[in-house]
Every structure is written in structure tokens, then in C-alpha cells.
Image (cartoon, rainbow, N blue to C red):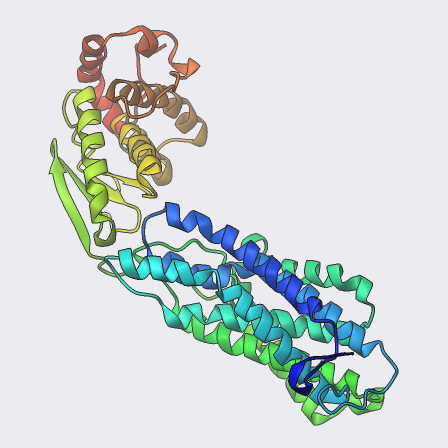
Length: 429
């Protein structure tokens, strides 16, 4: 027992909570570094408040397990009123102590990110309701560690508790997206133009609070040295039924985790007859996107009728058949993303995808015809000088690899209809 200043007492050494707290801060800080390299987006930051629990949660659970298992495993009575080990009082006091340290350590790295966002964001604001899943999920992780540590008071098993919580929080990513209804991780990337489903957010907050209360109640019963017969009661049965119901409903009827905005605001600019549009929050990226589209169309010769627009993926494209979609990130990846999308559409990959989805061509035919068009798309990117060091695929033979611009443009003029209809190309092999 350590006695601190002012008569306060610690049931466990202070390092048992300080070291995990430092580890949580380090893990979260490392995970947030990448957000500073991407466009300023509040939906992504709001989701990060709970998504960072994928690693921080297991650390908190391991610390809680170690802390509570050491207390539960002791048989000597502690007479100090500041550190009782009797039933719910002991469990709640340990839970409060652990949650205060772990949650403070978890939220600390978000402070500079929020300051940065407030100073630089030009669109939107934080989704407070969705972000609350972060503190609530941390409470669940700590409660699970307390419950497991009280039921199985063997400190050596603390890493196993971390693995169990990691697998639980990983469910939406690798097993069942519907598990996001009762764990803090969402399993879905967030970006401008999308929002977390308010119904799912409300449900998961309630579900995690109920699971937290159930775990603490179970730990309290075990800490009281309750006889097995006392576990059978209407309170226990009611709590168990509530937990089973909360887990079963989303698994039986999976909810939508993310909703798209009905009419997201957009910023557009026309270039070479192609309408280039991004979300209003990405308006500054038009300065990067427009020159790329211009050079690709100029390399092609003139805009074909099957390319009318280039839209960011979060926007509602007016016509998927004539619209190239791309996903914006930072300036460098944006250049590659829009170049791959627009060059592929110019080469006829869009019409081929449409033909495949409609059933007009088979999967084998799609693969063969796409291989011909990939070579043309690569040639266009090379002439536009937007993707450096990219060789022309071998499927093109030596035609695109050795042909000059005038020769390819003459070939394009003769085969424009085949490209528009996803018909087999002649002259490239």
C-alpha cells in the first residue's frame, strides 16, 4: 500500500496506471500523425475519436485486468477506508481511477489535432454525438478489463485480456460490420459527403453503456464473494436478457453505418469540355485536379462523348456512364487518383465496366478488353506526365510503347466507337 500526500492511499503502485497511460498516449499520437497529411475533414477527425480505440482499448483493458486481478487475488483485508475491496464499492472505485487515467491519456493527443482543425478547417464542424463513442468505448474497455480481472485474478493473463478486447473491437473490420452497433470501432472510412448514421450512433452509445454496467455488475458480484446460488435472480436475468437483446438486434437486422449527404455542396470547373467537381470542403484541390484533366484530354486529342465529367467519389455523379470518379487525399495522391480515373475512362474502361454490370459481356471478355485499354490509359498518363516511371503493360505489345503521339491519335480517331461500346480493339497487338 502506498500512502500519498494528504492521507490518500493507492491500493496499487502508481506505475500500474501511469505506464499504460503513457503507452496509450504514444499509440494514439502515432495514429493521428497521418491525419495532418490529409485534407482537413471533420468527419474523418470525428471518427478518429473512436477509431483510435482499436489499439488503445486493448492497452486499457490489459492495465485494468492487471490492476483488478491483483486486488481480487489478495486475501488480506485492507482496513483503510480509502481503499476498500468489498463488492461494488471496490470495483467502482477501481473503475473510476482507471478510467480517469486511461481516458485522459487517450484524449490528450487529440488536443493539438482539434486546435489545428479549428484554425484551418473551412467547412463543417466536429460531430460531437459520433465522437462520444470514443470516451464511451474507453469505459467499456476498462470495464471489461475489471470484470475479467476480478473473475480470473491471475495477473499473468493480462495480455490475454488485451487480445480478447482487440478481437472484439476488430469485429466490424474483419467479421461483421453490424458489430459496430455495440463496439466503438466503425469499420468504415469517413470523408466529406458522409456522416455516421445517427440511429446507429445512438444505439451503440446505449449498448456500450449497458455492456459497461453489466461488466461492472458482474465484477461487483464476484468481488463480494457471492455464492453461485445468488447469481440466479430476476435482476441478473433481466440484465442478461438486455445484453443479449442489444447484441442480437443489430446482428439480425444490420444497420447502415454511414449515410451519404443527399445533396452535398460542390465546387466545379469546366476544362476541355469536362466538368471537374469536388466537395465544397475540397475546393482548393481544383487547382491540382484541373491541370491534370486538361493534359490528359489534350494527350487524347479531344474529349470523347463518353467522358463528360470527373467527380469526387463523395458527390452524386449525374451519369456513371460518362463520369470518372476519383478519391481525393493530399496533393500527391490526388494527382495519381484523378490521373488513374480519368485516363482509364478516356481509354474506355468506364464503358467496359458498364457493359459487364449490364451482362452484355462476360467476365473473361471484360478482362481481355480491359487489358487492351489499360495500355492506352498508361500511354495517356505518360504523355500527360502525371505519373512518372510507369511502364506500358506488356499486353499492349509494342504499339503504344513505340508509337508517337500523332500515330496514336490517328488510331484513336479510327477506334473511338469501339472504345465507347467496349468492343474488341484492333491494332494494339
